[in-house]
Length: 628
Image (cartoon, rainbow, N blue to C red; front, side, top):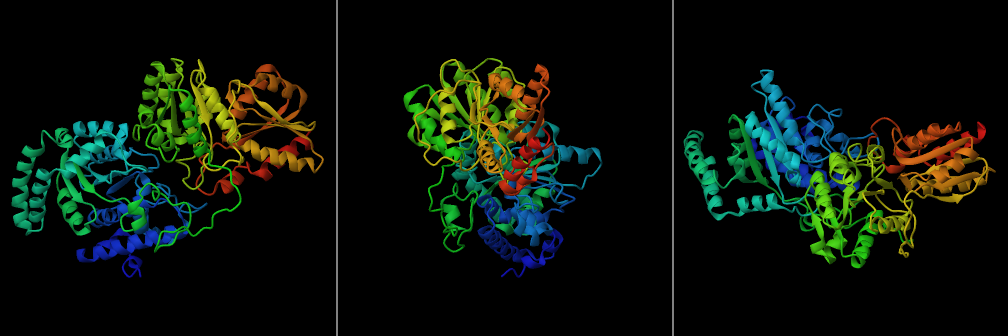
């Protein structure tokens, strides 16, 4: 089945094949990706869309000496398979296995780690300038940017710098008009206008025919067409206007043609862009027809039909936190006409699409642009609206300055909903939302809350939109919660007020967020051993409930804190700081993410690795009793 692919362990093996064999390599590589992901789920559509591009790049360029940066990194599955990791691809995204993204510690072929989007052109520009400074005139630097990454502001900043720095580098724009959802904004429309222009495409057809001519004729024709093309596009093509040589749009699924054009482009000095048109999910009918749903697959599926193979859980399940957010914001917006929804390119991922379908004029997908999303929300808030700005926790790191300068400093009532807070699982270190509390806790004027369950999320969202609340952060995890019957009437939660969930004389545990459910179970199991633990769901990392804290710190000599974020500077750290400031002498054990990056695996595996699983919580509480 994999006659050629099984012979390719490095790009050097690929280069031994004649060009006319590359379509077969692409077919085998595409099928291998589909077969692998049908058993071991991961990012799907983006990997299939760049198969031909991946093969062509490695056939033409001398990787790893030539530098290749993928953006966003989930496009790089084919790249991994062709660069010595075919046999290990079965471990992709598994604990201790291959990363789902390029990782410089995993392979010399992964030139740069890219888990978040829109960074490739900046990194490639740095590498290209470094090569010039080092006198490496034969080194090529290639950035592949796609899957919506060009909507990110950092990519525009890099293009601007690239135009003035005049480096020898190539940007390949993988234009599939998709991120997770359909790409929005002016750049998407601009690229569509280029790719569908009848005049431009007639001209491109002539160029393509010339490229199929003999080498000598092609060189003569290319010189002529470049001059004509410059006249045609100079004032209509943004990239040419920036002095970046533009080529395309090209068929991103014609590997033989891609090889030819890359060989020619490689010889041209200066900054260059190749615009290729691809189809996300190419070669798998279900993924082509429903590109959002097949961005990533969450379970095993049948290769022939696309039908899910994993049996659904027939017992009633709690909803996903993001779905509770989606239904709740719509419910609130129906009663408060000032509520608006904002997301940086994640409407279906964060479930804002629920409100978007019902109230399209009050929801805004701003593209992969977290900084803009925050300041755009600030502009809405200062004008009297209540924007709910939903950003994945790890992506919110990119907008730290905007949260401080544009929102907190001005005390604006922006409600930040940080989805995917805590350990997220197989996406790994680039996506774990574990830094938000420690990052934002020092910022004045911020309220930072984390619900233990779905009803608490609803109550916090209700509270956040009440008058004069100011900046309000609500963080919650990926996946399902714990309460099946979650549609309860909402009520206000007083800011900075926690709640006691159990009484106990032997020790106390203070929790923030959904791990409070695990603490409840630990407390229940320990009661069977005769250990009585008091449990407090603190709800807020800022401001703290000092009434609860004073009571607990006076009463207990040993206390455990539990959170799904980093310990350094996090919720537990705030308890230690408060105890020290007030002169309490009790012993406080802080459970959370240690001071290192956590790799990929299941959430349960990673919690156990960090001592935050049920057994770890119980052991910490037992230790409190043993050391009294």
